Image (tube, rainbow, N blue to C red; front, side):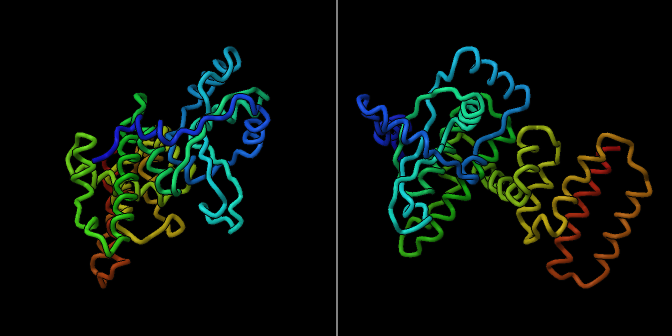
Length: 283
């Protein structure tokens, strides 16, 4: 049975000694950011970031930053077991504080490993109220992929027999099918570069979710032209699409289908079909 989230966090919280202010300042000077953890946090829109900055400049940093107290051996950086402090929550506040040389408070948490820290971050983000539908789907999908990976790697345990999608679906109040689609959505987004992924999650780029989910079922990467195929409909949706472009893609699909249907060819057909659907919807 999963522990109550807040109870679990209280157990993991490490209070800083109030008499050792130098210790807290020392920790602040060593805070590091891991891209793979930072990217779990849905990005703020430009106007949201500007508003946050104005509030902080006026009232200061009210909420403490959450920091994971771990070691270099846990993160597999080296075998020295030296202390390492990783920022988990408050990346925007930290950036603003650094830029304007403002003070802030910190809360320390301890986790056994990186996967446990990720699990905490995903749960914490899902507990916020201002997430878009895409951001919620992405976070649930990450949780699904992570749990599948953990259970799948434990071949000596019966844990792998658990239906992860059903368990998470019950936890989040959705169907197991929705959780699996969320997993495809997250896997597809993770094939894009961080900037492109953040643009979609922030709502700056509008891309058909079916196109992103289709990417999860291919072995192609962004360098193979996947991103171009996904973003093409989004770029063209803001202007009239010529019949010549549509006919060219239709012709290419027929040509691919007429040849030998290898795995790579089928993947190309799927991508081009999704591109064609995007163009037709934009007309």
